[in-house]
Image (cartoon, rainbow, N blue to C red; front, side, top):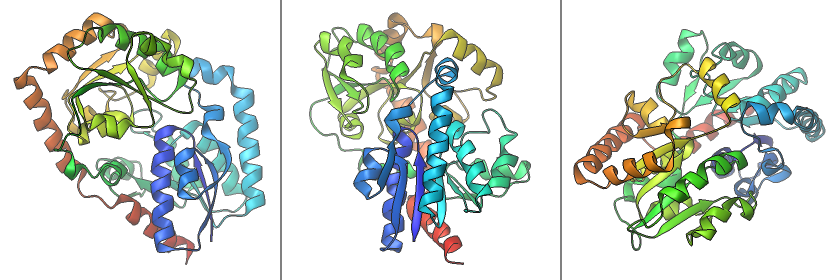
Length: 359
C-alpha cells in the first residue's frame, strides 16, 4: 500500500515520522512518499520536498511568498497524482494542506487528516471544509471532539503524540548538570525576533545556557547566542530539556513538550506588528500556549509581543527559580498529564487509517 504524507514544519515532521513507523508495524509492506523533513526520511519516507524549502511564518512573509507557495502546491498535487497513493495524510500545516486536500479530493484520492489545524482558535468555519474534503479527521486534544461535534463534524480522538514521543513517565530523572534551555522556535523569523531577547536576558545566568537550534535553519541565525558564549545544539531539544532547570520557549508544540518533561518554563512570542495585529483580530482563544489552553487557565507565564523584553523575561525566570512558584507549575503539569490521558496515539491513528484503506 502507498501513503503520501504532507508535513510542512518541524513538529509535524516528528509527528508524521511516528505515524509512519506505526503504520509500518501494522503493515510492513507500506510505502511512503511526500513532503517532510529529516525525521520522516529516517522513518523511511521518500522525500518529494523537504519542508525547509517553504518554512514561512507570519502573514507578511506568507503574502510575500505566495507565488512560490502556490507553485509548491501545484507540484505537490502533481506528484501525488503521479504516485497514486491509497491515501493522502496531511499533518497540520493548514494554509498549504487545505489547498492540497481540496485538489486531491477532486482526483478521487481519499484524505485522512492527521492533527487538523487549531480551527477552534480561529477560522472555525474551516470545520465544514475539513468534513467535506477528508475521510477521517484524527485529533490530538481531548476538547476537540466536543468542539467539532458542535459544528456537526465527526472526528476521532487518538491521544497526543507527545506522550509517545517523550515517554514522559521517566521524566523525573535528570541527565547531567542543570542548564537553562533556550528554545527560540523552528522558523527563521521566530528565531530572529526572539533569540536576541533571550540571549540578553540570559547573560550571567547561574547555570550554563544551551540553545536548541534546528538543522534546517542557517547557523547565522544563532550568532547572538554564539557571540555570548552559549552552547548551541541541533535537533536535541528533548535531551536538553531533560537536564534543564527551566526553559524559555517560543510558543508552539515545544511548550507542551516542555511541560510533559516536567521543566518549568516561560513562554515567549514576538512577531512583526502587522502579523500580530491581524492575529489579534482573528484568534478566539485566551492563551497562546498549549499548556494554558489545555489547563484553561494561566498556568505558565506568557510574554507576548511588547511584553517580551530582556528585563521582563529575566524577572519571570528568576521568580520561577523560587521553590513555591516552581512547585505550583509542576502541580499544573501533573494535572495536564491527567487531562491528556494515555499514550498509544500513533498506533491508534495507524489502525484507523488502515481500517479505512482496507475496506
